[in-house]
Amino acid sequence: MPKERREVQTPPPAFGPGPGPGRGPGHRFSHPGAKPKDLKNTLRRLWGYFGRYKIALLGVFLLITISSFISIVSPLLIQKAIDEYIIPRKFTRLVNIIFAMIVLYILNSHFVYFQGYSMMKISQKVVFNMRNDMFSKLQKLPIKIFDTRAHGDLMSRLTNDIDVLNNTVNASVTSIFSSIITLTGSVIVMLTISPILTLCTLLIVPLMFILTNWIAKNTREYFSQNQKLLGKLNGIIEEDITGQKVIKVFTREEKEINKFIEINKELTQVGTKAQILSGVIPPLMNMLNNFAFIIVAAVGGYLALKGLVSIGSIASFIQYARQFIRPLNELANQFNQLQSAFAAAERVFEIMDEEEEREDEKDAIELTNIKGEVEFRNVWFSYKEGEPVLKNISFHAKPGQMIALVGPTGAGKTTIVNLLTRFYDIDRGEILIDGINIRKIKREFLRKSLGIVLQDTYLFSEPVMENIRYGKLTAKDDEVIKAAKIANAHEFIRHLPHGYKTVLTDGGADLSQGQRQLLALARAILSDPAILILDEATSNIDTRTEKLVQEAMLKLMQGRTSFVIAHRLSTIRNADLILVIDDGQIVEQGTHEELLQKRGFYYNLYMSQFAVV
Image (cartoon, rainbow, N blue to C red; front, side, top):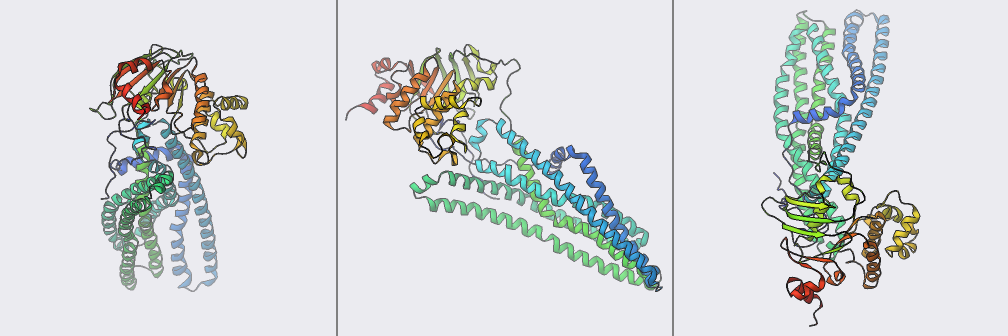
């Protein structure tokens, strides 16, 4: 059993480190996978997708039935040709039956092609729906899911696992239908030819089922582990590509290579065990197949010598025996893919079964024209039950005030704004906007009223114009440019290769951190929020640019309630209210001057930054 990566005990918040020390780039830890769901439940869930195309599946089933019927009838023509034309030497009539067989085989080829084509279209539609459903599900999941699961693993489920399912559907579904019909038809005809030979052929079936069932029981777990480890490997690849600069700065290439080799080795070992064990099936089936032919030939020859069956009957019976065993062989050959597909489907459904963000309460309102009054009343919150991160937080922000949150790293500053945006819901207490509990406000309207600028800015692989317009999709180009000018981003945008039409790559990696921050500020300005949240928004900007941005921010904050998380205390001297957070509690609050006069926690923080040594 491969060793699982450790579970995150305390999920970090969306904006930063939360209760843990440090401010990491994403906190992407893997999440131990749940036990695989039972096969019956997985098949039921899959039928929920295939069942939408019942008429098309009925058409495929009809084509398979006709094709299988032709396959079942063809050996009877061989029997007729041998017994009635070849042995009596009636060669003139033999041409007609040969022509009939040629026509049947040509028709059969066409039916096989159309059933494959139809099944391919159905499987593509099923995969299309599954991808859409899973991607839509990801948009509805709470932030904590992305904080506690490796992003590469989520990507693997959406792409690799669904592709595995798609390939298996194309290869296996028609084969399974065809096998069932061919098996049934072949047994019926075989019984009419010779019950004794049929019994001899059927003797190997229980042995086949016992062996395949034993192998299935032992390999299914390997295939499930294989999919999980593949997700982990994708997670490591995604993390290392994203964090290449950090890896190179600290020369940790060897460490990352060894980490990759370790997981890759586990993946190889598990995959090898699964493939070797399941790879035993085809040669085993082939051996049993040959064994059955020996029995049929020996017993059939004896019966022919006794005059109980004709030579043509033995020849056709051997064909039926092949047709009877061939579907079993095909199912055995498809076994690897079926096991992998079931494991992949379970991983997809595991994400689909994750609990979504809580729905808005039935009486939730569409709050508009927000004034910006914000109040926390005795708020308690914990990421892990029994370990509170915020303890009895209470404060009142009047409309238009600037509220600064200061304190040591991990004190709970970012968690406060995470609760205000309802990325997480509180354990106890109340959060009110304009006197209304935020749980009574529809989440969509709550978040539309908030403008957020983070320390780590994320930009999309789209033109600069569209990245800014993300703050307000209906904004005209002139409005976008105006917002960029207020954020002092217009000048550097103008000097980009294609100006506002320049397409950014890899999350804006071709821009400096300061430039990315200016675009994020422009995006927030364009959204024209009632409440503004700035999480170290100027930390990556040089001193000269910071001064210009501060002026722009002061204009933006006029008439808006603003929450500013700051480590540089010089940026919040003019705040209307400074909340000093330590160990999840407000230890001091007041204006800059009031807090300095107290000579307490804030005073010590301030002096540690500005005292002359």
